[in-house]
Length: 399
Ligand SMILES: *Cc1c(COP(=O)(O)O)cnc(C)c1O
Image 1 (cartoon, rainbow, N blue to C red):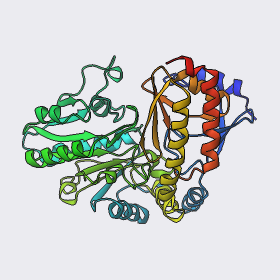
Image 2 (image 1 turned 90 degrees about the vertical axis):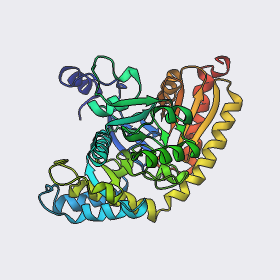
Image 3 (image 1 turned 45 degrees about the vertical axis):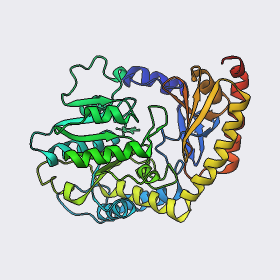
Image 4 (image 1 turned 180 degrees about the vertical axis):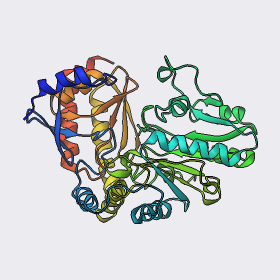
């Protein structure tokens, strides 16, 4: 059995150091639990960076993968394959009845959606409006779409044609709009940006302005989709439908897959030769996504999200009363953010040392995003560990 030190040495020598990693090697996961190479167990309230949406190694996903791996792992899009069609039908029926394109990641889904928006609106429309604090990926177009200067440093010049507006600001949006706009791309709930929830009136204004100017509304549901909010998709919380919706993260229950769903008349613009993905929609990835969707349905996970959200909010609000470092708790379903009024890195590190994984984004927002099938006792244990971490970090004195 390889030791932690050996793996760390190997990484140092052979793996590019573009991540800040914790010094643990994770060797096994099950539900909300993780084990490192030294046998220590952790409770994971941010599994796979919000990607293992029904917990690590859900038995239905494992079974579907095992079965499909023995039948056909990959077949290119020269052919039809059964599972891609089935997955497209499920996503279409669960959302707004469009058609799907499959790829392998969130960035690719957004990249494709933006290409489709330009292609569909054509006639010299080229501008893509995105919101400050948003996150859309790391490719050149999606990095440019990500209206946060820290992600652009060292990569200039950015792609032309992007316009940034403050999130949730109706007047700024109106001022930015003109007939050159091809699309507005935004997250119904910003994830990396700190769990910021769009107002219904804001999303409706985007919708109306897009209709008025012949632009497309593109919702990036990579993080807030797939049941995270207690609805299948984040936009269903307000009911304001997009023309295109992008998915990835939770879609495959931990297996790499991305997709976008587009209104059929919009989708028609993506004719052969305009866009493609070699791996996109292959049987193995689609089997994982179909099993994930089936598990969410069969195990009533959307109802569980609502129930566990109430419990988590109540307990987190109790922590907010106890520790002045917590300003407030916000979010929807199991996409919860704990706004601190000081940096949260120390609290996250103490939680980890005590066996709990949570995340901190934008310095001062803790992200609490357990899997959709989390149990009350797991939430209770997580919040007890957070309580201890806050006490240890003297959170009460830091306000
Ligand atoms: C993570 C994320 C992406 C990028 O997804 P990748 O799979 O890392 O390319 C895009 N949009 C949102 C909202 C995300 O949270």
